[in-house]
Image 1: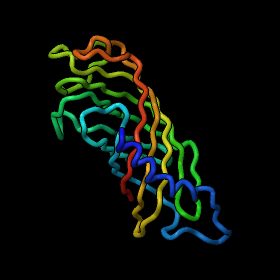
Image 2 (image 1 turned 90 degrees about the horizontal axis):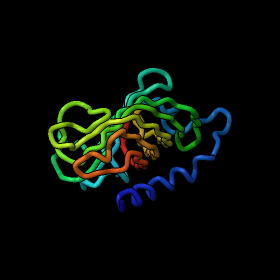
Image 3 (image 1 turned 120 degrees about the horizontal axis):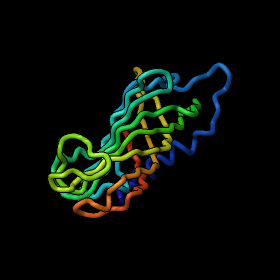
Image 4 (image 1 turned 180 degrees about the vertical axis):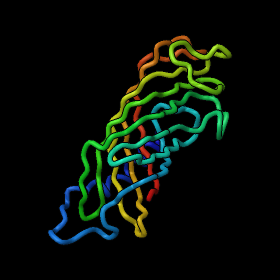
Length: 193
């Protein structure tokens, strides 16, 4: 949780200048950000593994993208604790370029996997996995704000804040019972091109 606060404070200086409009005929250092792919690292309120949240975000076409976020439980590490892994499609609702960068507001829908035990392959919608009742999957919806600052050569620094909710049919049946409705928030910093 303290990482979430520190990362949030890192975003404030960039957002403070978000309302500065460009003068006609001018542009910020690297031009408009196109952001085809980015990787971000941060923290989420839903994760207790002690590992950072890692997000991979790919623009598919125009404002449509796909994004996956999680701590990598079962792939990168096997630390105990709970985590939400996210797999979603995103759509850019608003975008504004200023003298310091580009801000955008995105909506997302997809699914999340709530893990409280060992992560087994696949997703279990409805009832938890049968091996150890360690994970369950369900739909999620998100709203995300991003601020992108060009660094040059088509590369941008990215700050992202996401808030959302995931719903699980039987999270209360997990080995560590959880609420079926799981709100969450995350903050990440990263780089993209």
